[in-house]
Length: 312
Image (cartoon, rainbow, N blue to C red; front, side, top):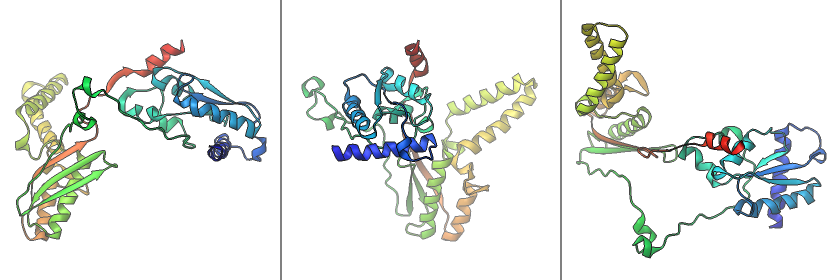
């Protein structure tokens, strides 16, 4: 523990000098007390590490380090308060796991962990444990309570290749089936390229024949309403709708999208070109694209308003 505190003390010192833009010798910092904002209530897990550290830093550096508890809204009140403070080397924030995932859970936050803070050091690793009573939950083990929300499984014919692509450390996953010549290098490369395109371009359908009637009706209604509101007569508006629908197909249908590596060619034209290299026709028959968190509605709490109420 003593060696750990020494390492953290040195890290904090260097970071404070850097954030304050100090160019003089380290002994001249700090010239006044340093505040360490704890966004949780006194006596909690963050306090268990933050307060001993503040005592150690006070003794080691010779200036008082004060832990200021600003609890509320699951740590958001303290984080928002710390984000507004100057980065002068006299304000530190004791963040927790909550703050690393909050922006993925809540649509509105009065701070940005990436924009408003500079990481300094890891103070502690704290395990997170799921606890449930098997009797009350009517399960025999935790694994019985874990369910797979969605998955896709492809069993392809012998002449097909499955292209896969994972983007952003697992945030986007794509699987696409390309029929051609299995094992052919051109077919394999094409399947990989199309998978990368799908990850970037987010097609909703394979071709225009796959667009549902509901989606067609919705797009036509939106386009017609916009044309009529612009003052166009009915017959002109109808022609404008036809043009809007072609644009919709080009955006939503994989085979009609501009290929990401050559926007002068569609995906279909790219497949035709690669098919000549492979010595056979290459056809995309299906694809699946998953994005992390897709289909899960974010909580709609307005944390900015909640923090403001705490600050009154």
